[in-house]
Image (cartoon, rainbow over all chains, first blue to last red; front, side, top):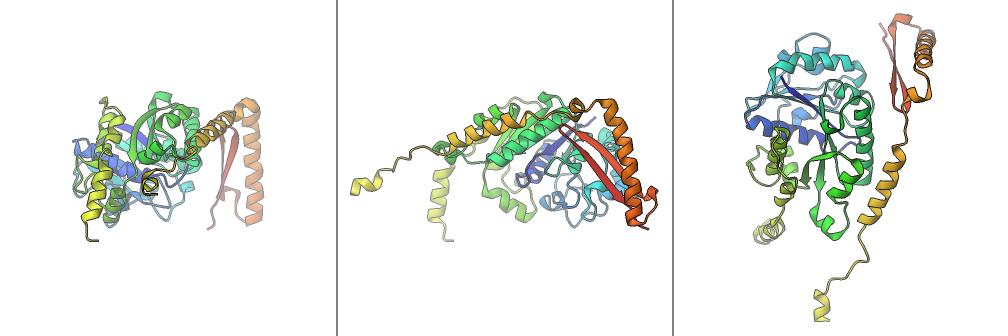
Length: 271
Length: 91
Protein backbone atom coordinates (compact mmCIF):
# COMPACT_ATOMS: atom_id res chain seq x y z
CA UNK A 1 0.00 0.00 0.00
CA UNK A 2 1.30 3.43 -0.94
CA UNK A 3 2.29 6.17 1.45
CA UNK A 4 0.46 9.25 0.19
CA UNK A 5 2.20 12.61 0.57
CA UNK A 6 1.03 16.05 -0.48
CA UNK A 7 3.74 18.61 -1.26
CA UNK A 8 2.27 21.99 -0.42
CA UNK A 9 2.97 25.62 0.50
CA UNK A 10 1.04 28.77 1.22
CA UNK A 11 3.01 31.02 -1.09
CA UNK A 12 3.67 30.28 -4.74
CA UNK A 13 7.11 30.07 -6.31
CA UNK A 14 8.83 28.34 -3.40
CA UNK A 15 9.82 25.29 -5.46
CA UNK A 16 7.14 22.68 -4.75
CA UNK A 17 7.13 21.22 -8.26
CA UNK A 18 10.91 20.92 -8.47
CA UNK A 19 11.00 19.32 -5.04
CA UNK A 20 8.19 16.87 -5.91
CA UNK A 21 9.98 15.84 -9.12
CA UNK A 22 13.34 15.38 -7.43
CA UNK A 23 12.05 13.50 -4.39
CA UNK A 24 10.10 11.26 -6.77
CA UNK A 25 13.24 10.58 -8.81
CA UNK A 26 15.34 10.00 -5.69
CA UNK A 27 12.82 7.49 -4.32
CA UNK A 28 12.44 5.74 -7.68
CA UNK A 29 16.22 5.50 -8.10
CA UNK A 30 16.27 3.64 -4.77
CA UNK A 31 13.97 0.98 -6.21
CA UNK A 32 10.64 2.34 -4.98
CA UNK A 33 7.58 2.44 -7.23
CA UNK A 34 6.48 6.06 -7.25
CA UNK A 35 3.51 7.92 -8.69
CA UNK A 36 3.55 11.70 -8.98
CA UNK A 37 0.20 13.46 -9.32
CA UNK A 38 0.14 17.03 -10.60
CA UNK A 39 -2.78 18.63 -8.76
CA UNK A 40 -1.82 22.12 -9.87
CA UNK A 41 -4.75 22.19 -12.30
CA UNK A 42 -4.63 24.92 -14.91
CA UNK A 43 -0.85 25.36 -14.75
CA UNK A 44 0.65 21.89 -15.40
CA UNK A 45 4.38 22.16 -14.68
CA UNK A 46 5.40 18.81 -13.23
CA UNK A 47 5.56 17.18 -16.69
CA UNK A 48 7.89 19.96 -17.87
CA UNK A 49 10.18 19.59 -14.86
CA UNK A 50 10.39 15.85 -15.55
CA UNK A 51 10.90 16.38 -19.30
CA UNK A 52 7.71 14.45 -20.09
CA UNK A 53 5.64 17.23 -21.65
CA UNK A 54 5.59 15.57 -25.08
CA UNK A 55 4.47 12.22 -23.75
CA UNK A 56 1.22 13.29 -22.12
CA UNK A 57 -1.82 11.67 -23.73
CA UNK A 58 -4.38 11.80 -20.93
CA UNK A 59 -4.66 14.18 -18.00
CA UNK A 60 -6.29 14.09 -14.60
CA UNK A 61 -9.39 15.70 -16.17
CA UNK A 62 -9.86 12.64 -18.41
CA UNK A 63 -9.78 10.49 -15.29
CA UNK A 64 -12.29 12.73 -13.49
CA UNK A 65 -14.58 12.59 -16.53
CA UNK A 66 -14.14 8.78 -16.58
CA UNK A 67 -12.77 8.70 -20.14
CA UNK A 68 -9.86 6.59 -18.88
CA UNK A 69 -8.83 5.00 -15.61
CA UNK A 70 -6.10 6.58 -13.49
CA UNK A 71 -3.71 3.76 -14.40
CA UNK A 72 -4.35 4.29 -18.13
CA UNK A 73 -3.56 8.00 -17.82
CA UNK A 74 -0.13 7.46 -16.25
CA UNK A 75 3.07 8.24 -18.13
CA UNK A 76 6.25 6.34 -17.28
CA UNK A 77 9.50 8.26 -16.86
CA UNK A 78 12.10 7.85 -19.60
CA UNK A 79 15.01 6.80 -17.37
CA UNK A 80 13.38 5.61 -14.18
CA UNK A 81 11.09 2.69 -14.86
CA UNK A 82 9.57 2.90 -11.38
CA UNK A 83 8.45 6.52 -11.73
CA UNK A 84 5.04 7.47 -13.15
CA UNK A 85 3.22 10.77 -13.64
CA UNK A 86 -0.45 11.66 -13.71
CA UNK A 87 -0.39 15.03 -15.45
CA UNK A 88 -2.63 18.01 -14.73
CA UNK A 89 -4.85 19.55 -17.35
CA UNK A 90 -4.13 23.03 -18.59
CA UNK A 91 -7.66 23.63 -19.83
CA UNK A 92 -9.34 22.71 -16.56
CA UNK A 93 -9.93 24.85 -13.52
CA UNK A 94 -9.59 23.76 -9.91
CA UNK A 95 -13.38 23.82 -9.57
CA UNK A 96 -13.75 21.03 -12.14
CA UNK A 97 -12.19 18.67 -9.61
CA UNK A 98 -13.51 17.91 -6.18
CA UNK A 99 -11.82 16.39 -3.13
CA UNK A 100 -13.95 13.28 -3.77
CA UNK A 101 -12.52 12.99 -7.31
CA UNK A 102 -9.02 13.09 -5.88
CA UNK A 103 -9.88 10.46 -3.27
CA UNK A 104 -11.21 8.20 -6.02
CA UNK A 105 -8.06 8.65 -8.15
CA UNK A 106 -5.67 8.02 -5.27
CA UNK A 107 -7.82 5.10 -4.14
CA UNK A 108 -7.39 3.49 -7.55
CA UNK A 109 -3.60 3.93 -7.51
CA UNK A 110 -3.11 3.16 -3.82
CA UNK A 111 -2.36 -0.55 -4.13
CA UNK A 112 -0.03 -0.21 -7.09
CA UNK A 113 2.68 2.05 -5.68
CA UNK A 114 5.03 2.40 -2.73
CA UNK A 115 4.74 6.20 -2.72
CA UNK A 116 2.24 8.67 -4.17
CA UNK A 117 3.37 12.31 -4.14
CA UNK A 118 0.74 14.95 -4.90
CA UNK A 119 2.04 18.32 -6.11
CA UNK A 120 -0.38 20.87 -4.70
CA UNK A 121 -1.07 24.34 -6.06
CA UNK A 122 -0.06 27.23 -3.82
CA UNK A 123 -2.64 28.82 -1.57
CA UNK A 124 -5.34 27.60 0.70
CA UNK A 125 -8.41 27.40 -1.50
CA UNK A 126 -10.06 24.77 -3.68
CA UNK A 127 -6.92 23.38 -5.32
CA UNK A 128 -5.28 22.97 -1.95
CA UNK A 129 -8.26 21.09 -0.55
CA UNK A 130 -8.37 18.82 -3.60
CA UNK A 131 -4.68 18.03 -3.13
CA UNK A 132 -4.85 17.26 0.59
CA UNK A 133 -8.11 15.27 0.44
CA UNK A 134 -6.45 11.89 0.13
CA UNK A 135 -3.04 12.59 1.65
CA UNK A 136 -1.91 10.91 4.84
CA UNK A 137 1.22 13.00 5.23
CA UNK A 138 2.30 16.47 4.13
CA UNK A 139 5.54 18.11 3.13
CA UNK A 140 5.26 21.87 3.60
CA UNK A 141 7.76 23.85 1.53
CA UNK A 142 8.94 27.32 2.44
CA UNK A 143 11.81 29.61 1.56
CA UNK A 144 13.49 31.57 4.36
CA UNK A 145 11.55 34.81 3.69
CA UNK A 146 8.78 36.14 5.93
CA UNK A 147 5.84 35.94 3.47
CA UNK A 148 6.61 32.30 2.63
CA UNK A 149 7.06 31.31 6.29
CA UNK A 150 3.90 33.01 7.51
CA UNK A 151 1.91 31.43 4.66
CA UNK A 152 3.43 28.05 5.53
CA UNK A 153 2.20 28.58 9.08
CA UNK A 154 -1.32 29.13 7.76
CA UNK A 155 -1.13 25.96 5.67
CA UNK A 156 0.07 23.93 8.67
CA UNK A 157 -2.95 25.24 10.61
CA UNK A 158 -5.30 24.15 7.81
CA UNK A 159 -3.68 20.71 7.54
CA UNK A 160 -4.11 20.19 11.27
CA UNK A 161 -7.66 21.47 11.01
CA UNK A 162 -8.32 18.92 8.26
CA UNK A 163 -7.34 16.20 10.73
CA UNK A 164 -3.68 15.63 9.86
CA UNK A 165 -1.58 14.82 12.91
CA UNK A 166 1.33 17.16 13.67
CA UNK A 167 3.90 14.36 13.35
CA UNK A 168 2.72 13.70 9.78
CA UNK A 169 3.51 17.25 8.67
CA UNK A 170 7.16 17.96 7.88
CA UNK A 171 8.98 20.99 6.60
CA UNK A 172 11.44 21.58 3.77
CA UNK A 173 13.31 24.89 3.70
CA UNK A 174 14.23 25.65 0.10
CA UNK A 175 16.73 28.16 -1.33
CA UNK A 176 18.59 28.41 1.95
CA UNK A 177 21.68 30.65 1.79
CA UNK A 178 24.24 29.66 4.45
CA UNK A 179 26.44 32.69 3.64
CA UNK A 180 23.54 35.07 4.41
CA UNK A 181 22.85 33.20 7.65
CA UNK A 182 26.51 33.55 8.62
CA UNK A 183 26.27 37.30 7.90
CA UNK A 184 23.19 37.54 10.13
CA UNK A 185 20.99 38.56 7.20
CA UNK A 186 18.80 35.47 6.96
CA UNK A 187 16.66 33.53 9.42
CA UNK A 188 18.35 30.37 10.66
CA UNK A 189 16.72 26.94 10.40
CA UNK A 190 16.17 27.10 14.17
CA UNK A 191 14.33 30.45 13.84
CA UNK A 192 12.00 28.98 11.21
CA UNK A 193 11.45 25.68 13.00
CA UNK A 194 10.79 27.43 16.31
CA UNK A 195 7.99 29.49 14.76
CA UNK A 196 6.40 26.72 12.69
CA UNK A 197 6.81 24.00 15.33
CA UNK A 198 7.10 21.07 12.92
CA UNK A 199 9.95 18.68 12.17
CA UNK A 200 12.41 19.43 9.40
CA UNK A 201 12.54 16.97 6.52
CA UNK A 202 15.32 18.79 4.72
CA UNK A 203 17.16 21.99 3.93
CA UNK A 204 17.88 22.67 0.29
CA UNK A 205 20.64 25.22 -0.30
CA UNK A 206 20.13 27.74 -3.09
CA UNK A 207 21.69 26.31 -6.23
CA UNK A 208 22.11 27.20 -9.88
CA UNK A 209 22.22 23.48 -10.70
CA UNK A 210 18.44 23.28 -10.18
CA UNK A 211 17.81 25.94 -12.85
CA UNK A 212 20.17 24.23 -15.32
CA UNK A 213 18.49 20.86 -14.70
CA UNK A 214 14.98 22.32 -15.13
CA UNK A 215 16.07 23.96 -18.41
CA UNK A 216 17.09 20.53 -19.67
CA UNK A 217 13.94 18.81 -18.40
CA UNK A 218 16.09 16.49 -16.32
CA UNK A 219 15.61 16.70 -12.54
CA UNK A 220 18.85 17.64 -10.79
CA UNK A 221 18.95 14.22 -9.14
CA UNK A 222 19.40 12.62 -12.60
CA UNK A 223 21.43 15.36 -14.27
CA UNK A 224 24.82 13.70 -13.81
CA UNK A 225 24.96 14.97 -10.22
CA UNK A 226 24.09 11.71 -8.47
CA UNK A 227 25.53 11.68 -4.98
CA UNK A 228 26.83 15.25 -5.14
CA UNK A 229 25.69 18.75 -4.17
CA UNK A 230 21.96 19.36 -4.36
CA UNK A 231 21.30 15.83 -5.67
CA UNK A 232 22.76 14.52 -2.42
CA UNK A 233 20.29 16.66 -0.44
CA UNK A 234 17.35 15.10 -2.32
CA UNK A 235 18.86 11.67 -1.65
CA UNK A 236 18.98 12.53 2.07
CA UNK A 237 15.33 13.62 1.96
CA UNK A 238 14.29 10.42 0.16
CA UNK A 239 16.10 8.34 2.77
CA UNK A 240 14.41 10.27 5.60
CA UNK A 241 11.02 9.60 3.94
CA UNK A 242 11.97 5.91 3.91
CA UNK A 243 12.55 6.17 7.64
CA UNK A 244 16.32 6.52 7.93
CA UNK A 245 17.65 8.84 10.58
CA UNK A 246 19.94 11.30 8.84
CA UNK A 247 20.71 14.64 10.46
CA UNK A 248 19.49 17.70 8.52
CA UNK A 249 22.93 19.20 9.16
CA UNK A 250 24.14 16.81 6.43
CA UNK A 251 22.10 18.77 3.88
CA UNK A 252 24.23 21.83 4.51
CA UNK A 253 27.51 19.93 4.47
CA UNK A 254 27.22 19.70 0.70
CA UNK A 255 27.80 23.43 0.68
CA UNK A 256 30.98 23.25 2.74
CA UNK A 257 34.00 24.14 0.67
CA UNK A 258 31.84 24.91 -2.33
CA UNK A 259 32.62 28.62 -2.09
CA UNK A 260 36.34 28.22 -2.64
CA UNK A 261 35.82 25.57 -5.36
CA UNK A 262 33.40 27.85 -7.20
CA UNK A 263 35.91 30.72 -6.87
CA UNK A 264 38.68 28.71 -8.54
CA UNK A 265 36.28 27.32 -11.16
CA UNK A 266 35.29 30.86 -12.13
CA UNK A 267 38.90 32.05 -12.04
CA UNK A 268 40.06 29.42 -14.52
CA UNK A 269 36.98 29.24 -16.75
CA UNK A 270 37.15 31.16 -20.03
CA UNK A 271 33.48 32.13 -20.21
CA UNK B 1 45.26 53.00 3.83
CA UNK B 2 46.75 49.70 2.63
CA UNK B 3 45.65 47.87 5.78
CA UNK B 4 42.33 49.68 5.67
CA UNK B 5 41.62 47.89 2.38
CA UNK B 6 41.70 44.52 4.14
CA UNK B 7 39.76 45.65 7.17
CA UNK B 8 36.19 44.59 6.79
CA UNK B 9 33.66 47.24 7.66
CA UNK B 10 31.75 45.92 10.63
CA UNK B 11 27.98 46.00 10.25
CA UNK B 12 25.85 47.22 13.14
CA UNK B 13 23.69 44.08 12.87
CA UNK B 14 22.11 41.98 10.11
CA UNK B 15 18.43 41.89 9.28
CA UNK B 16 17.93 38.47 10.89
CA UNK B 17 16.89 39.80 14.29
CA UNK B 18 14.32 42.14 12.75
CA UNK B 19 12.94 39.28 10.63
CA UNK B 20 12.74 36.98 13.65
CA UNK B 21 10.84 39.55 15.73
CA UNK B 22 8.39 40.29 12.91
CA UNK B 23 7.86 36.58 12.23
CA UNK B 24 7.03 35.90 15.87
CA UNK B 25 4.56 38.79 15.91
CA UNK B 26 2.82 37.69 12.69
CA UNK B 27 2.63 34.00 13.58
CA UNK B 28 1.36 34.72 17.10
CA UNK B 29 -1.35 37.00 15.68
CA UNK B 30 -2.49 34.52 13.01
CA UNK B 31 -2.93 31.64 15.45
CA UNK B 32 -5.95 33.41 16.86
CA UNK B 33 -8.20 32.36 13.93
CA UNK B 34 -11.10 30.22 15.12
CA UNK B 35 -13.16 27.54 13.35
CA UNK B 36 -16.52 28.77 12.02
CA UNK B 37 -18.23 26.09 14.11
CA UNK B 38 -16.98 27.78 17.25
CA UNK B 39 -18.68 31.03 16.19
CA UNK B 40 -21.90 29.61 14.73
CA UNK B 41 -23.52 26.51 16.29
CA UNK B 42 -23.34 23.46 13.97
CA UNK B 43 -27.16 23.23 13.72
CA UNK B 44 -27.55 26.90 12.72
CA UNK B 45 -24.69 26.57 10.21
CA UNK B 46 -26.32 23.53 8.56
CA UNK B 47 -29.73 25.21 8.27
CA UNK B 48 -28.18 28.43 6.95
CA UNK B 49 -26.20 26.42 4.38
CA UNK B 50 -29.35 24.87 2.89
CA UNK B 51 -31.09 28.21 2.84
CA UNK B 52 -28.13 30.05 1.25
CA UNK B 53 -27.68 27.37 -1.43
CA UNK B 54 -31.40 27.54 -2.30
CA UNK B 55 -31.39 31.34 -2.55
CA UNK B 56 -28.19 31.47 -4.64
CA UNK B 57 -29.52 28.82 -7.06
CA UNK B 58 -32.74 30.71 -7.54
CA UNK B 59 -31.00 34.11 -7.94
CA UNK B 60 -28.31 32.87 -10.34
CA UNK B 61 -30.80 30.87 -12.43
CA UNK B 62 -32.95 33.97 -12.89
CA UNK B 63 -30.03 36.30 -13.63
CA UNK B 64 -28.31 33.98 -16.14
CA UNK B 65 -31.52 32.59 -17.59
CA UNK B 66 -30.71 28.92 -16.91
CA UNK B 67 -32.53 26.15 -15.09
CA UNK B 68 -31.82 25.81 -11.39
CA UNK B 69 -30.39 22.32 -12.05
CA UNK B 70 -27.66 24.02 -14.10
CA UNK B 71 -26.47 25.92 -11.06
CA UNK B 72 -24.19 23.97 -8.77
CA UNK B 73 -23.55 25.56 -5.40
CA UNK B 74 -21.06 24.18 -2.89
CA UNK B 75 -20.89 25.47 0.62
CA UNK B 76 -17.63 24.81 2.45
CA UNK B 77 -16.48 25.67 5.90
CA UNK B 78 -12.91 26.43 6.96
CA UNK B 79 -11.47 27.64 10.18
CA UNK B 80 -12.40 31.28 10.30
CA UNK B 81 -14.42 31.59 7.09
CA UNK B 82 -17.11 30.15 4.82
CA UNK B 83 -16.49 29.48 1.11
CA UNK B 84 -19.36 29.34 -1.39
CA UNK B 85 -18.46 27.98 -4.85
CA UNK B 86 -20.97 28.47 -7.65
CA UNK B 87 -20.69 26.79 -11.06
CA UNK B 88 -23.14 27.70 -13.83
CA UNK B 89 -23.53 25.34 -16.80
CA UNK B 90 -24.77 26.84 -20.09
CA UNK B 91 -26.04 24.55 -22.82
